[in-house]
Image 1 (tube, rainbow over the protein chains, first blue to last red):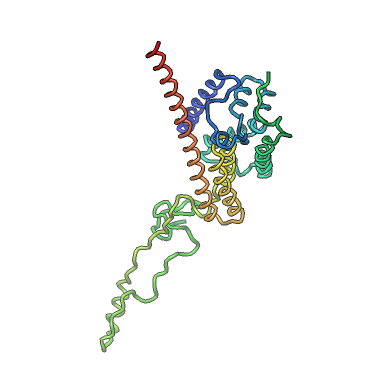
Image 2: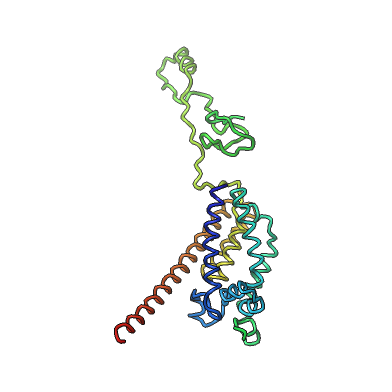
Amino acid sequence: MKKRIAITLAAAFFAAAALVYLYFTGEGEGAGIPCVFHQITGFYCSGCGSSRALRSVLHLDFYQALRYNAIFTIGLPLLAVYFGALVFSYIRFGKDRISEKISMKLIWVFIAAALLYGILRNIPAFSFLAPVTLA
Amino acid sequence: MNCKNCGAELHEGAVFCGNCGMKVMEEPVYQPPEQPVYAEPNQGEYHQESYTEYQEQGSYVPPVMPEYQAEPVVDGERPNTVLWIVLAAVEIFTCCQLTGIISLIFAILGHVAADKGDFAEAAGKIRTAKIWFWVGLGLGLLFVILYVVLVALGIAAGLAEEILYY
């Protein structure tokens, strides 16, 4: 168990370092990670704006986060809880005892919503779903 | 209870023997044949004595090979389909749409197979899902590294220009 705690702490350290980097860099711009899909098609995929959304969340600007990427902002706490529980299960039992207890319905709904989001935000009528920097 | 193959003591609920790897069954897997393995060719006069003598010595019992498992994952365990569905979906929405979608398809196929009870089929599908997941992540990382390198080269070129011409 000690080894698993050590691995978890090491991973958490790198994650924290990445978050610190994100917090202090480029407002309004992305994190520097290029999106191949956007480069080639020009469309916004479901994930476009999530780096900027994460930075906004770090700065506690939740409305801006939603305007960058709503699905990501809403899904973030859900994913955080799931992966947090996963890490605890991994540390305590050495294996995943969480996933079997998750509601599959919730997962399907979320995936469907995220896919729909990726399509809608490219339609002019739903342009408010596309990433936008607020004044 | 004890392993039928090697005789080592097994703990309660063991599926495989920890000593020889033999699958734990209700009845023994290997049944020695009724007659001796080696049968003396009939040479006309059949010596009853030598026959029973041979039988008393005991017939040759070849060692039984424990069942070979290709993967550490056992048929009896359900692969973690839920986790890989979530991971594949996250990959679609964060880094690599293409591999994420392929990985998700296989993860879903694995999930459906596991729900039907076919754990072997499910394990195969999940393995494919895992491969696509890691390929996507690797490619994504590669792109980021290339991008960083290009940006760094651009910065270096700009600096070099300033130094040389200023």
